[in-house]
Length: 457
Image 1 (cartoon, rainbow, N blue to C red):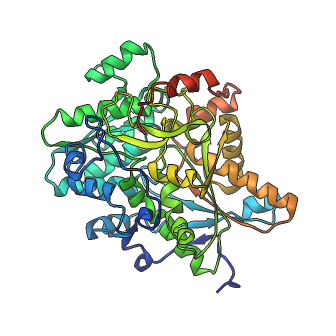
Image 2: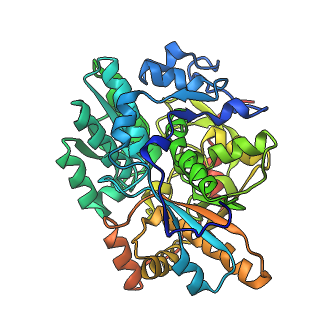
Image 3: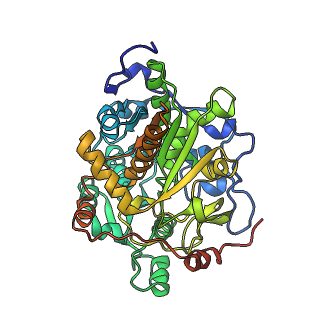
């Protein structure tokens, strides 16, 4: 099988789709630190988490012992509408770069939400419906998660209230309208509809918002309504669990043709896409079965891994969510209104943070003009217009392929193409018109955010 000609697109059969999600925490000898109750400082329990999240999702969130969690049949049936997703050999890109490297990308944009987010949205909506809830609330940055959740809630007949980061609400009106098409109520955040939103507006007049702000508003909206719970599209362990279908399919597709990856790359905001892509490969490495190079790519404007601290911090700006030990810039850090709206979270998944701290994963930060240069190059060569978030992974994948050209090494590079950029044309327009600028926070700005981190060991 290793000598078999590799097609442009490797598809699995429906029968080869994952029947279980993979929980990488089960194979980690040193587990991620537990979530802490902000009121007591003690580890969160399922009962306490269930006041905010669905009961089954709370159990999944705290489960660090079971490696495999069965995927309910109704979710698997929904997955079949757009999964298995293709693993694409970037032959044209390889040729254009003149590299001996073999480049593959896992394309997650083959659904109306245009991204990988639907993998977890449908799972979370399913468990909310099973619990008999009326609806759910959430936040969204670039709008991909809000779009996916709107679709999932529409499928199950649930009410959906979305707080969209104000900068993205204004930059991406068509993403907002897709959410409304699926029946969601969309509010720019911070807003005057919640007490926390009004408080943030008073402290930061004219702010363009952040995911931390929107999370606070969504949690308040959920906990103040009977029959509602809050759901989150990234950061949490339960989300990485659902997104493991990406990595499991990728691994199976590579195995089908006897291919061994050397480098696996993903963009990193809160960690859902990257965590889902690398999870089964990390598991192999933790069990001593293989060795890989994992690279997280984040924007220089919001560098939680490369410039943050590994400490306990609040998951939201309003400081009402549980405390998580993670690489963070501080819950009060308000990043610049960059065009990769989905990568503007102040912290990183606890699981990925622990893997990074152990040296299992590395991280790089890139400027947004470099990202859009890579996005345009990729679109012209491979024929897919990538989301700005995905283009972070493209940038570093190209950089690694160019290194192989210089050294003559024939490495296999795999990256996650999380979604399409067809709702990001205002951002592409600014890039093409030369109006896009790069922003890197100063040391003083980073320190200001970190100064408000709670004093917890």
